[in-house]
Figure 1 (cartoon, one colour):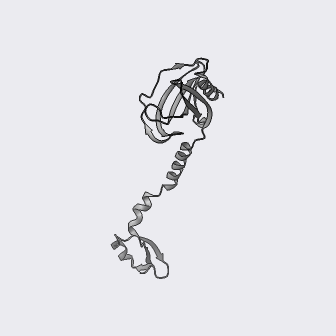
Figure 2 (cartoon, one colour):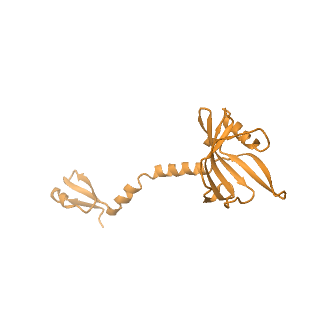
Figure 3 (cartoon, helix red, strand yellow):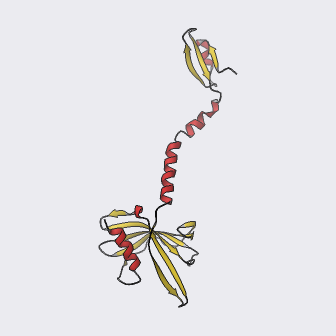
Length: 184
């Protein structure tokens, strides 16, 4: 198969189906066309021309999924005076959004045993009022594995009402999270 084909100027208009790149040969004053051996690959070239942008978007999504979670603390709650449920709380400090006195942050509540809906961990977006010392859950999904991995489990209503935090053992972990989130 010839890579180059010399054609007179009149024959140039007849090439409609063959993808050719024009080049004028100075010596013979004829149009030389380089025939594309893969003329049907142009749609693929056009389709994948934005792959660097796609790669950057996937990298950004991966970095968010692989967030650096910081362990805040652990709580224990006795059930039926025999079993003790432990919940470990994690916060993603890169997800903190500041709006006046309000702070939004993503948290993981890692359960020691499965919850009522079969969840092993809860991924929640929580909003804290730094001045009013209160909190509310904006969105929450259960996960079948620890550290918010595995299948998604629907937990019900997403937005809770504001909960006033009181000093004491029950809300101590949330005061700890609020101190971490509200400090500049």
